[in-house]
Length: 154
Image 1 (spheres, rainbow, N blue to C red):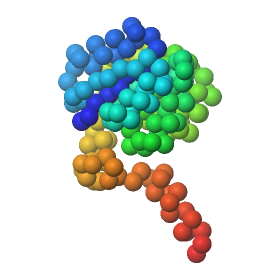
Image 2 (tube, one colour; image 1 turned 135 degrees about the vertical axis):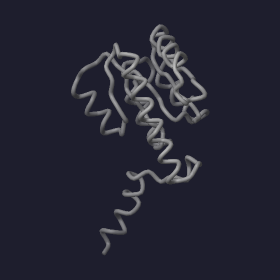
Image 3 (tube, rainbow, N blue to C red; image 1 turned 135 degrees about the horizontal axis):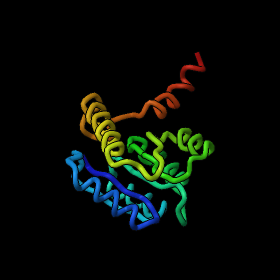
């Protein structure tokens, strides 16, 4: 596993999440942190984490803006929004972007760890099916978009 990127503009939130991850065996070998969406995009490009845990309201680029860019460039990265905003429009936008899950702050550590374990198993299964290389996998949405024009011509 490549690792997890924690993205939040509040340092205490980032350190708390890192502390939770550090106390348990999660199966992820590396963690990175970013203070805003712009840093998240850059770190995703550099490190290609398996999972990104990201806040919504942040300076420079919001979590939703960053998620949009990251999903376009790295559709296999699993994004979990962790936010204090329980607004339906945010949830809707996140789901349209292909975000894997949407958690509300404060999140119970065991709930976060259970979700990360579930996602880790999904990633392992995808790699078993599609091979070890992240780039060898064609995500369904992209594959379906590529196939749609051919289907409509017949």
